[in-house]
Length: 310
Image (cartoon, rainbow, N blue to C red; front, side, top):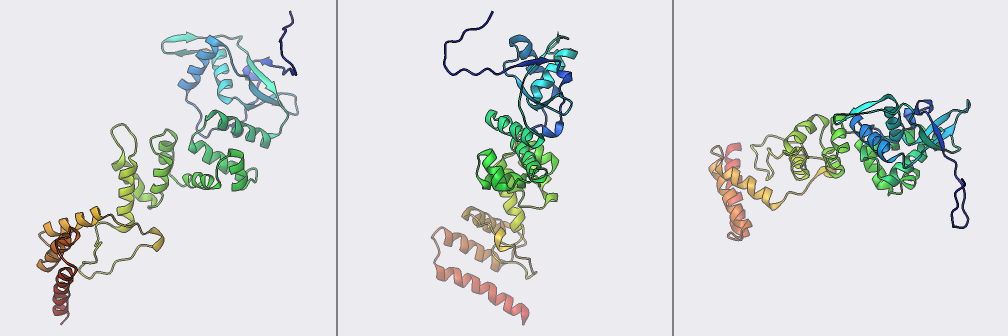
């Protein structure tokens, strides 16, 4: 019996039904860097058995007229799982006759990969790490520049550059970004310090829930760059220190300065002159000492240094 639809300008799109194991799957065309785990695939398979395959996958034909998957990698994996049988939450599922629905399109590998990316972007089905690796593949394998990639993803070129930087993270750090425990902004901040220091910073910044605290990372990165354990006020014993690069200077907050002054006053190894200067400086910040009094306290330190040299 034919179906009647009361609408104008209707076009028919044929759907095909096939054994999912007859579909050629090229992993290099997948739009995800980290593929869904077996539980996610099983959950989708249960849904497809219950409600049917609501969205067809997209295939193209190769030289041997075989269907080659363009979009719908997870759905295809779920269909294959249904055919072979699986267990989920204590219940067995199996339908050896289940068929994969697909529509046909004409494209080559490069176009197939681009279409997979676009589909995932529209469905918000990828993470920043997926996108970072896919964008690298677009650059390396298909010759797209950052501006072209930004246009494809419908984002700013700056965001493409940010995602490119994520590839400098270690595999463990990338995993944290992928699962949402480490934000992109915090990950980019983390890249300001040497790779060998990042694992300790992440460990110290990880909360009980598993998320990495952006505030703790920012503080740790600041301390790492400016060597917080050295001498922020220039009151060292004269040992030369290497100044940070101008591009990496981070302004200190007044809270940080007051904290250092207080800890120096409390340090039993602090000389009397420096301790006195720090106490005056603290009162100067609070408005209880004048600039002249602060200068006099500093002169006492300079006088002691001059006597040492003499």
